Image: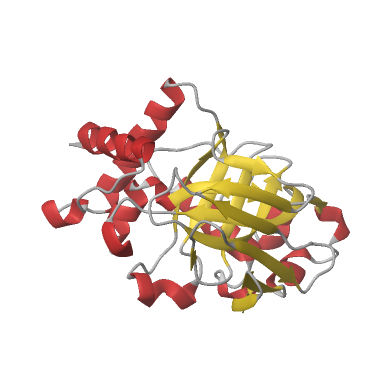
Length: 267
């Protein structure tokens, strides 16, 4: 069923429509099966001309695990068709391609060279070229955001779109693991604060989340590559905020080196 699930999910992604929950129809569908489906989707997208630009890590925020019923990180590729660079810090987006979209403020990292499993956070910082703040739009093809970990891992790891803000050279941070973990992010919708959080919530900090993910990637049989130039987004620092057309989301960060971002939504 791996290919059938992959084709169904990709068709739902292209048409922005819901699907029946995989685990509801197949109680034996587990994470190992989901890895296989995700790998098949990756192959199908590469075959139709899309290019990977790196990865997203999801469910690193422990404070939302009980809310969504997923209690460990997930991850998946990001693509040239889903990544937008927003150096000026302002962008707009149509919500038409997404199913039940939500917005996540995150810290993103760009690799200067390939990391290795077993590296410390300080060693991983030495593989990083730049740090940025931005937004990930997440969405799911399963109704009401109800799923098991295997479902959402197969479902593109919930990735919809990534907006990468100003790239700050890693050399501007004297102690990147500590300084990035110490970030505070406030998320506003229109003129109202809707959530805020500290970056320690993502598995104790962005570089800690990165270390966990690099080690987990190395343990998977699919062996997806992590290359110099890849982007990795390390997980939401607030809860994921539901999105509707006609809204303006914006963030404020406690570190002036990382400016906030504004995103306006359209139909």
